[in-house]
Image 1 (cartoon, rainbow, N blue to C red):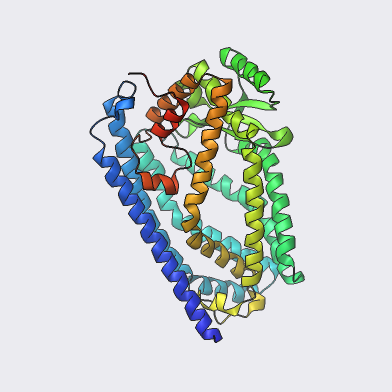
Image 2: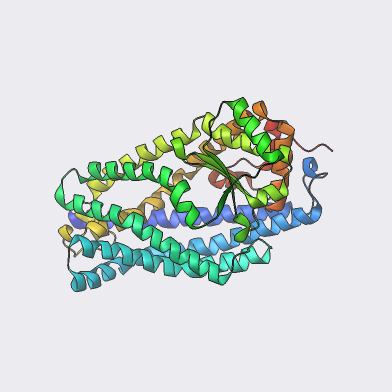
Length: 424
């Protein structure tokens, strides 16, 4: 095929994939909305004694509202992506900055920064609507406009300080070596490992306050649990999640000496000590079942494939021409190549989301099973029911939507597997 034919075919494939993926997401959201609304009238029988009808109604309405907002946001994102690529938006931005700043690595870094800033500004109305519209309407938002602004500025600064040097290194490697993609992957891998240490110890405390779990029954139960599991934990911390949201959660983070379990203060306010112990057992289960290691290895393997693919695409004229960058010299497009790849990859990756979601749900089942061996399965079930209720999580999701988007099993499946359905 001629270069022009290749570019045209690639452009058509990209547009078709984007439209197909967007249509799929809109259809899945419509199924979720219809399924949840159809089951809004009554609490599922296994939960009738534990979940009030008003709470079930709230969960259904919240789920529907989130799905509708997601539909609008998804359609907007697709139009914006078309504008950046075949619509010529990235071409125009690269042209303006190239004329003004030249083609040095720092100028290319400026292009990356300008693209990220414009993207953040274009997404800002959606974030504001989600935080001060949707979340506030259902009683979950506790952030203020001032805190929202401070968080945004702080996040931008931290991102620039962390990602800027990595991006500059990649841009330099792209000019310096034919095997830049391999060295770039090595730099990315080192950065990812470093972040698993730095995030819990340095970065997360910039946004939230973390305090060691106070003495009391919860701490005593936690220490006994860790001893039973033979799990050496560097820290058990409480995070001031209530400063921004009423949602409750817990998570495991870090590796090696930086590993720790974090409990939201909202979680401690909602659950009894035995329930907190069961939730902690679940989080320890993720580590003891090697989920953290597996996800890290998968991330590194997939990123290696991604860098290799980018290394090949970056030298193909049709890759640029098919996405609106046909008349720019390849030697000047290091930053453009990175941006285009970041834009294109999710377009095709959307069709693989069921695989990642299924793998994540399997991990959750395994962590639940581990928790049932080292704590009370009934208490974990009661904790999950309380969290479903207080977080307004629907008990009746659409099964196909679950296959694509649920990283955690639906309530009925999860509690049935645990043998911890509420007693009627």
